[in-house]
Length: 348
Ligand code: NCD
Ligand code: ZN
Image (cartoon, rainbow, N blue to C red; front, side, top):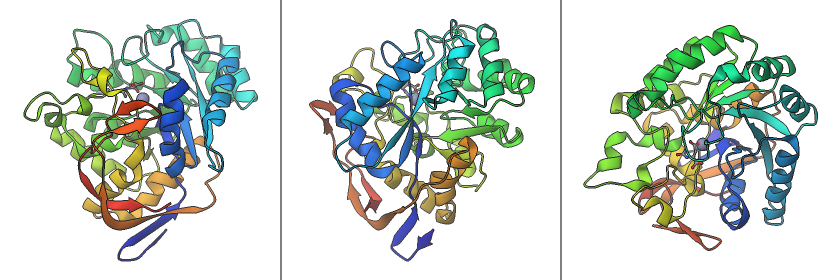
């Protein structure tokens, strides 16, 4: 890392959690991720979900076909676990290099999770096989029990599901995705080296008040939902701590404006266009710009056992105006920080 008064240069980063969608929207959103990141872990919650090696390979081809000429980007594919997943399919996904991880969506926890796992006991054999072959488990960590308050679903998931799973399968590498609570940050920090977490820009910037500031704000709604201020502060501390257990994963989740601004609006925040600028603001505010490269470019590859990227990217300390809406190949999408001015500008 090199930094002068107004420039910050870091090794080229990766995004360890993105939703690239498919079809026309894929072509519209992919360049934003590919511009800033060398690689990205691509979520499999398409319709239908990416449950097989063949589907993962086909989706990877569609992503590469949608990549504008001259852009250097590698999608890292993820399998979507269901109650019926065949352990051997996951072993094949690892062997063939198609899958970099497999994702546990508790059924009905979030967008595109209807085919998810209804009880982790149902995928016990799959998890054991993943532990054996070294395929990491990526976890959406929320219980789906309607009796549990939406703001408590992550903390309850740790107690009911994640802590027992990590205890029973100590050799399984687990990424606790998009953590949103002090409890999650503490759980990860206190777990062994096989447990890590990604943190999104929105959970470092906003608390739950942002969803209701002067009226309902659908563009601040994502899952897991933003929590109280003390959780945001705990996440800031974890992200900027320098601990290799925490790394960058935007959870950029584009939805058309109309699908967000609706009587039953979709969960998901489209943060890809200004992701690095958004994270840099947090690290600067925390007086931790020296920890930014580790979070963005080093801790993720180390956890996944992948080489770090060649090359660098540079951010300049200069005003960066975020538009109100972005046209993603014909689909209007409101980006995170819409209408705001950020203090860092991505130079490439
Ligand atoms: C994601 C989506 O839209 O696919 N939404 C979100 O709020 N993060 C699903 C997910 O990752 O939970
Ligand atoms: Zn996600």
